[in-house]
Length: 257
Image 1 (cartoon, one colour):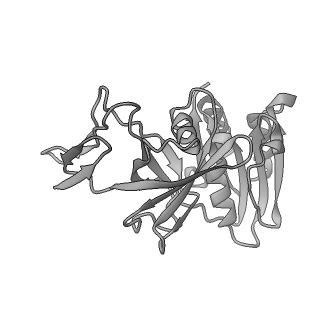
Image 2: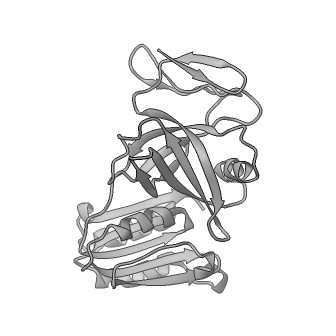
């Protein structure tokens, strides 16, 4: 049994084993369309160096949160109603096990509840500074010597994490789509043999078009895509039609048009 302190009350609950409380230590602006949050906990050892995704459990605005609990049958219970927790999936940009600090990057977009939460902290309001990490989850990093990668802003942090962990001799292509292309100023480094092409939606350049055009040239590459769900389906179907094995594909739809 664990006792959790919130701003206005104490809540008793049996927390899920993959749930960890963390405090937001810092939120900074990372170019015009991203924020970077530094989270600190007591023990982040479950978030290994190859762990890439987690759920960022954020308390509601203006009321006490109801954190998850474990039911008698072992299932995890997330409350509905006013105290419900928002728990979208985010990317571990880096983790430091010496300081128990984890960094994640947040794409700023209109109507985003996590955007609202992070902006609140950036502006100095710490009312929702205590949050939870659930996980880690996902397929981990993507070891590969040859890659074709394509992503819009929703996948930039994961793309950056994968790219910086490729071997020095890796080759391939990366396409990144943002409203104004490279002007988004998101920091991404690639191995010398991997070419990076920025695409601008404002100029009518579309991620799926470039990924489909490049696909036949990458019969021996691992394929990684993050973007709109229908675009992801089209790319996956085309890759399978070209005879690509499922194990070589990491194609994800992070949002729906």
